[in-house]
Length: 352
Image (cartoon, rainbow, N blue to C red; front, top):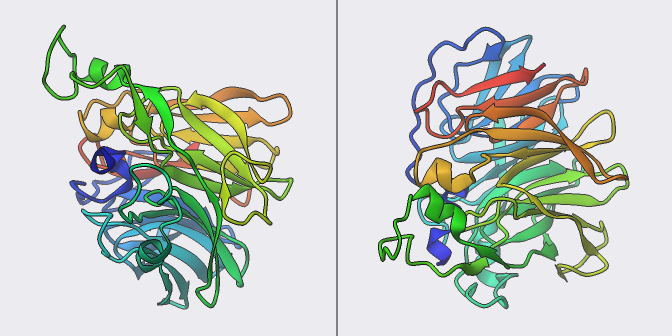
């Protein structure tokens, strides 16, 4: 079932349409898909557009585009220097350009080929069914000019990569047995049907598919799961990983659960100026509603107080929500219509 897990974390089958003019209050002009947002130290908004590259927005206008097709995320080192990840193409089990790049002054340099690392090490290969190397770097978090954190959604791991290309596995995230009812409901399965996906057992293992990493006020690294096939609801977990972790098979004292589920298809995390953890869910009906059936109901941004473990909805009904970031002034920005272009132009907009 490895090839059937969360298709969102590959670029296969994604429609990249030229964006129409943005509606009032939103930024447009993107080709899409949009998989990542960031904020530069000078307040510029950074957009990872997989069809184009890194787009810099200042005062609501696009001021610079750095070509890097296949980009999945960007994290600033300085105002003009960034860490950038490029993800998998149609086949995450092949080398299609998965890597970590350093972009500076309009030029880019490959720091490490992350498919080659996955092929050589395969950190989750000891988990049953994970014997085939699978790499899709999906999120990056700067640790300054010397290193970055990379979440590999295909490899189910969190990596520390220094500026010389040396890779250290911090944590490996496990499968979880989940219900198949959501995907059967999405398919409107009739009783006793043997069509796909109706014939699936009631429960089956799903890969973690980590898609996001954010550094907490406590210095730990917080990681959110998309949760792979069969795309269950309410099963996406959030972990926190100690900065000094080494090859940690989660859970253990260096990789602990913060939320044992309760979210659906987490696609991004960010800490706000209030110290809360903001959690972006791609779609309340799961990634399967977006990627397999084309029937999204909309995603949600949640604000979570980690001391009380209480979360409140900040915004919901956001179609194809893929990324969030906080501006230098504390404003919260998000993407919408970010994957297919079917439901409108890909946009970046401010949450009121």
